[in-house]
Amino acid sequence: MRLDGKVAIITGGAGGIGKGIATAMLKHGAKVVIVDINKEAGLGAEQQLSPLGSVHFIEKDISSRENAIGIVKEAVNTFGKLDILVNNAHASRQAAFNQTTLDDFYLSFNTGFYPTVNLMQAAYEQLKENKGFVINFASGAGISGQINQSSYAAAKEAIRGLTRTVANEWASDQINVNLISPIALTEGVKQWSENFPDQYDKMLNGIPLGRLGDPEKDIGEVAVFLSSESSSYITGQTIMVDGGTLKLT
Image (cartoon, rainbow, N blue to C red; front, side, top):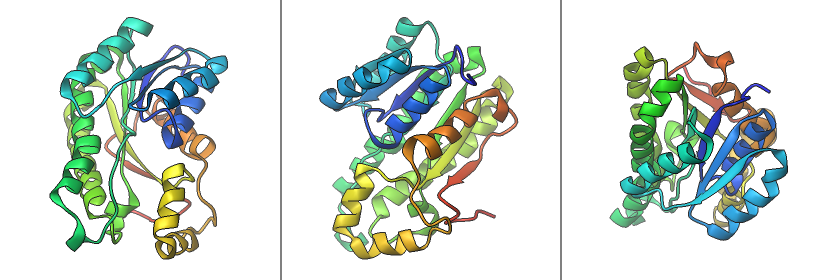
């Protein structure tokens, strides 16, 4: 039980990678707060995961700074403290750059970058008190410059820059701040494969291990490691959980 007694907030936890991380953390003893805008999916995930441990669903739009403060407050009121923040949620639209609108960029930054900023600032005092852990999310789309992903890639690389800076600033508080850059089989990836089958096939063929990751067993277990004392000497790093697709230097 590597996370026994720890409390985690996971945004976008009602499905996909977020739900996979929630499942893994519960199995390792954490108490988990799932945050999602989809009430039906969130309640369903809460019910499905409750046999594994203590899980609480919060229906909130994370694009609001006020909601970020409320999410942290509710998590602490529910479970007594906060040790782990996982900023997983992110929405975007795929299009060639010349067809990408400012609204597309607003969507990506308002659901990914700014919620990451707001939740980290809202959680800081709790994370400082408990020598906590933050997991943000990068993407190979930004690292490699994937076509048709300009708004998403820009926000993800902004999150990477933010993470490296905050990791340095919060190191003296013993707060570890890292990134996961995943490839996993989720509903969003399935939809992307239907919209851009050539890109999907190229991506799949470029994975040395020959498969997409499992949200719980592959991505979730790495998130557990990055939220445990086993990773206490790791901060400011981008962890590529992508089957060997990209190698950072």
